[in-house]
Amino acid sequence: MNTMIRWAVLAALCAFGTAAMAQGTAAPAAAASKIGVINVRQAIGNTSEGKLASAELQSKYAPRQNELETLNKQVNELQQRLAAGERTLSDEEKARLRQQGQRLAQQLERKQNELQEDANADQGDVIQRIGRKMMDVLDRYARENGYVAIFVNDPSSQTNPLLYSAAQIDITADIVRLYDQAYPVKSGSAAPAAAPKPAAPKPAAQKPPQQ
Image (cartoon, rainbow, N blue to C red; front, top):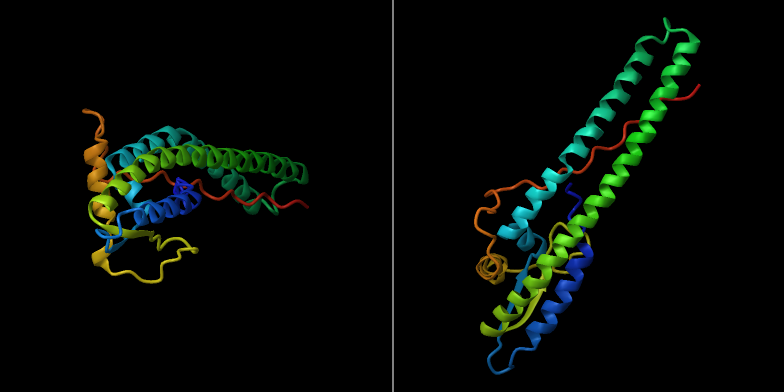
């Protein structure tokens, strides 16, 4: 649910970015001289905990996603039956098929919205949980390495305030590494090396037209 679901992260990015800048400037002026950038979305998703959470959410919502795909298939099949039988089906049968298709389409739309809301809530919880701990890691990293400021860089966001940054000042990988060291996943619960994010629900099929 990418969106699962774009991980409901935009608000969290702003909050984390503000905190990162404030905490970065809190470093002693005599020792601080560096400026860094971090892609918080990427950092959260690339931690072992983030990968594990993504895989767990995908598994959790897979049955509901399959249900949506089944409903969508049924709606499409009804539409095809109506189109194929435009000249052969009785008016009564056409009306019955249209009514059935509209009922299924409404059910599909409702379930899609419910799934999206639940997925967004779960993803928001994951972001908040990992994000709070990541800010502690980021704060310690900034103070120990003399950073005067750390800015959020999120190229996928339309509101990304960072126009340009050199690759040399990107600390995303460092923060992911330090986070995994500070908060390792439990033994036997390691996430897959590249756990995919839950897929977003497919758009609702168009409702059969009424005559």
